Amino acid sequence: MDFIVIFIIVIVSITLSVLLIEEMRRRKLSQKFEERSALLLLLAHQIRTPLSGIRVYTHLLQSEDLGPLSIGQVEVLSKLERSTAQATAILRKHFSVTGPGSGEFQAHAMKMDLIACVNGAIHSLGAEISARKHHVNFDVKEKEIEVTHDPMLLHAALEGVLSNAVHYTEANGTIKVDIKKKKNLAEVTISDTGIGLTDDEVKRVGEKFYRGALARKMRPEGDGLGIYFSKSFLTLMGGDMKIGRGARGRGAQVLLSIPLTSSL
Image (cartoon, rainbow, N blue to C red; front, side, top):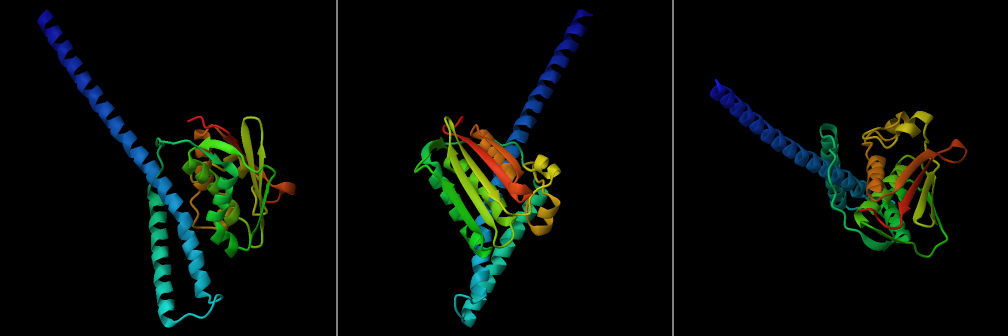
């Protein structure tokens, strides 16, 4: 009788061990899949900015505002337009079927000038800013603000907020960027004269894939990931983001609190 009990205990123990090992293996594979999905989603989102620039410049050339085009040039631009549209459609399809996981990012912090980083983010959106005839006011009293962060994370965090300001502000709008240095952090305030936010939208902006009603109407091809990624990157760096309405209830205002030294 004792032998049977011992035998049953051994079998149960082996079975539980096998199940535990299998569950650990399944979770490990699932984690790797989620990390890879998150990184792919990030890369796809970042690729959309240069694609948007290519599309804007292509339309500018096609309008012949810079001069007449030959038949061959028209054909080449037409092919470029189709290729850009195809690439954008592929990315949009990826967004519609893939949800981001909670991936791990390997950051590499280095010293850099925050003012130069902000200028770089503005420059990367130059095509869209010019096409919409926006006015960008960059107000900073410091000559240099040294920070220690991963350059990719910092650039992406800044560009995500600036991109929203550019795309959700009507033509001939104004985007203001203000930088203030405090004791242990720098505050970057980005405000615009765009479509603005309702009280409910202020609470939800930054959620994965969330977009307000006016945002969906104004830019149907948007993905609702720009502010989400920016906020996530700031959190990784030990920073914070506050979103609200612009002056006199017009447009939006985003405050990015960036520590001078990364927490990574």
